[in-house]
Length: 107
Image 1 (spheres, rainbow, N blue to C red):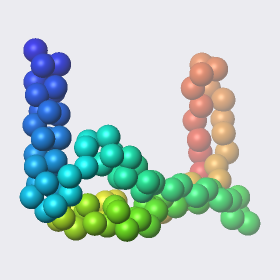
Image 2 (cartoon, helix red, strand yellow):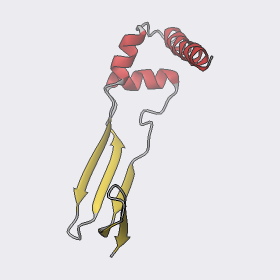
Image 3 (cartoon, helix red, strand yellow):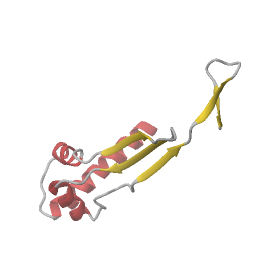
Image 4 (tube, one colour):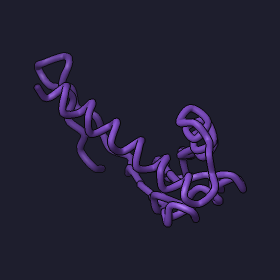
C-alpha cells in the first residue's frame, strides 16, 4: 500500500511541476527537466590544515542559465542548500575489545 501511495505522490508532484512550467511557457518533458536540473551539483571539498584537523566545505555549484530559468518560474531558490563547513579535530584512536568499534578521544 505504501508503494502505491508513494507512486501516486510522485506522479502528482511531477504533473504539478510540469503544469506550472507549462503555464510559464516551458514545455519540456520530465526527462529534459531532470537533465537540466542535474547540472547543478553539491560540491564537497576536504582539506587538512597544519594542525592535522580535517576541514570539509559543502556547497552547491552555480546554477546554469537553464536552471535559473526553471527555478525562477517555479519560485524556487537557485541555491537550494546553504554552504556548510565542518571541522574534525585530530584525536587519538584507541582500540576497543571489539575490532569493528573504535573510540576517538580528543588530544
